[in-house]
Length: 475
Ligand SMILES: [Zn+2]
Image 1 (cartoon, rainbow, N blue to C red):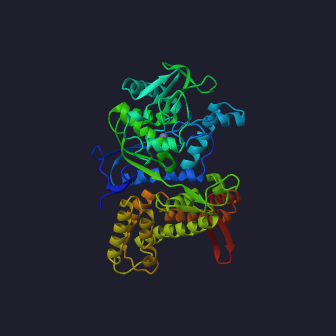
Image 2: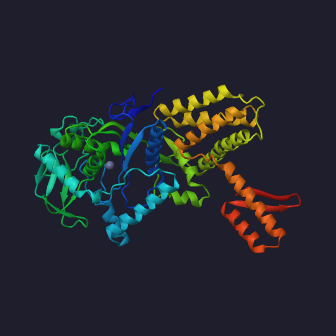
Image 3: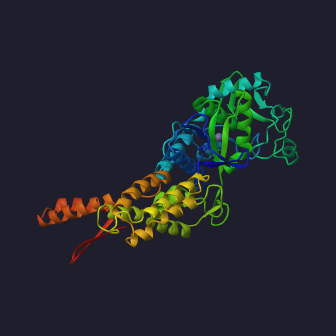
């Protein structure tokens, strides 16, 4: 089975074919950095990382860009032409700090969380404020081509100039107006038109451009311009969270197609929201959790990565602390598969027949790959990997099969990013330190013995001296 993806734009699962052979250009909408992202935000970012890893597993070179929005994302963002405060500025006022300090501080936290969650670095992480010139050029192009118009310092996109507007979200311009998902504004030719550039002398982050003295870009324009600058006019995949479908991506599609004369992305993919305690996360319920909150409860970030990726990205999944406990146990079993495979490879256990388990391995590999190829169906893929554990515990896998299984398991773990496959070597390191400590104690070299013990503590190992010798366990 070739890789199939669900394209929100056409509402169907389609075989993935890159525009250029062997290469994938992908743009992921990143965070607006006015606060530390919560675990729900990471569902969408981890989905993007999983997609990239799976494309790499399949042998593609992936040019991946994930932006950082540091200006222009206004609070009332469920309408195309959002009104309200700039999220960054509002936070700057709350914290009585400079907007730049706000965006830099929260960007650092975001990157820290992403690294903890094992997210691979994209080719670029552009910040909107660094691409103002590109945005201005694109807005000028839209004016020149008759898709946008200026009113004082504001520039609006003329939605009626792009008949496909609404295709992604299924919204019709008339319905938007009737449903008042538009802001009434006398300046606009049509109520559904949205701002590409906004003039506001009171805005803290503003630029002098051909449009006027104090302006700033519309949020949608930012992504269109950054995608073009870094990946070109046509890309393979554009992703985001389900809340990005409308208005953000709908507007991006219109702007890019009209400015570039070609569709922005062939495939649009969207991750569903995460539920927490069976509902929407909310400050009043106190369940807007961050990555540090999860770590504080004694979980590793990769447990969270597993919990967020265990469900298919387009299905609803729930987060509770009880589920996190279950996920930790499940992930430990997946880790154990690697330990058991190492043992068979090392000749410490396993079937006498080196070829035992060959057909099982074939089934596991094809189950895993067809699951992932089916629009990243992680539940199927993970369940396939889990099939290896029992036969390994029962000694039904031979050494030659284990060698191949371990090579496959490492690749699979690399694609998923949450399974540890090197526990065996970690065990060897622990045993070596315990031996060093024993030798140091025997030589009455207390400093060396303490150093070895500290190194073990740092690895999360607890020691117990028993009459039979030292017993150790992971905390
Ligand atoms: Zn975006």
